[in-house]
Length: 144
Image (cartoon, rainbow, N blue to C red; front, side):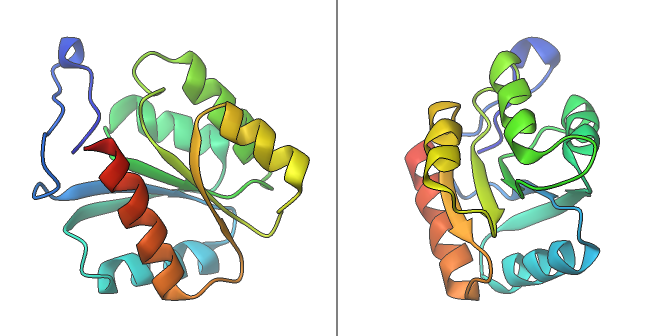
């Protein structure tokens, strides 16, 4: 399932049976831990969960680690989620990596803008664990 550029020595898996690699981007360590715990308990086949505290850290991680899915907050210091999504969209290696926004910000205009830049899903904080799992499964199913 991992979206990886074969010219960079990586591959695209064809099934969801392959263990997933996820990146959680949120400036709150408490929220990152909560999301990670929910994902681990979800029953999804997860190989690893990477973390970044903002868009800058996320891009650094994405430059060295292929991932199947990014779960990103919008409001973060240094580089917010909106800018992260724009930068990913401009990078041929990253533009196919699906992003789900997990945020308290539900401004209609902002969400429309982000959906136009490749965001595949949105979860409003606070959320139920079942909501996170369902949205992750929906987005990953679209990738098959």
